[in-house]
Image (cartoon, rainbow, N blue to C red; front, top):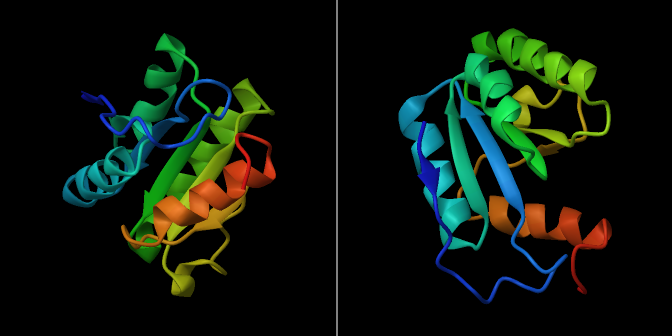
Length: 137
């Protein structure tokens, strides 16, 4: 696991800090690419590796969002199982999926399904956080 430290100080005032994201993926390369895109957009990101690393990372600290990147249909079931484990431990924890439109109807459930596109994802997360009162629109 690696922690990426945010350098962008202009992200918004939010609750006086930058939103923290725990990111897991079925593809290490894709997870790192998404993590870099979020980091560049002003999020604090920790990579959990694959879905099995989520629970261990959550024992060490809390996160504002847990995001599970799903790049293929065969990863849906393990991602959903990871989300259920997180929700059983803390029903209030935000758990979202990053999935292509083709996977958005394949049984994914949670607090949100966001685009996997590195260019669209930061704006989608900002929109959700704005709706939840993190910072003014």
